[in-house]
Amino acid sequence: MRLGHTAKYAMQALAFLIRSHARDEWGQIGEIASACKIPRKYLEQVLLDLKSAGLVQSKKGQHGGYRLARAPHEITLGQAVAAVQGELVPLPDWLDEPAENFAVEFGLRQVVEQARDAVQTVFDSTSIEVLVCRPGGWLGQEMG
Image 1 (cartoon, one colour):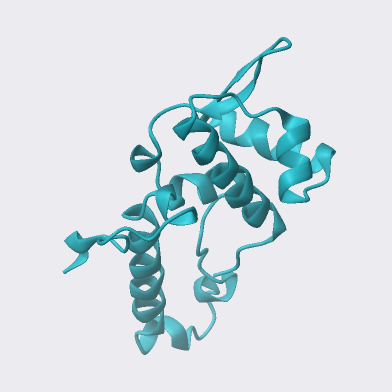
Image 2 (image 1 turned 45 degrees about the vertical axis):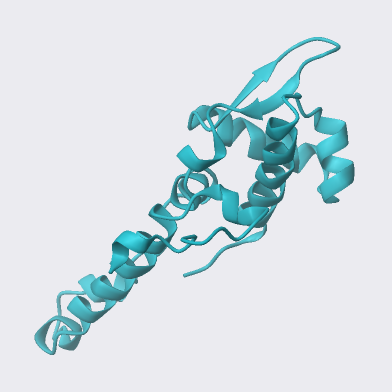
């Protein structure tokens, strides 16, 4: 699993927008960039990706900006990561190499798939609220 700078910036921007959501305000891109220390051009792309995924909304004008498209508890970390970087834990290419694939023969592929699925489950069952607080069941109690 690799979370790059784009994912980090997305999480910082979402944390800012969670706080704005609590005040029923729109976050202006300049304020977000300054508060989160994110280069403005980079932030613009991140917010566009989050908007394309339906996680944030934008509004033009003096009182416009960005805000969450729905309540923070309805948006998961998995959705946010997928919006900006795609698959959270891609399988390594070498698992599909055809010649003498020891990974398939000895079950390594299944172990790697199970690990990927476990990580994805945690991200998909954890809301972005964890970016600003750690409520009681923040890791998704349904995981068992």
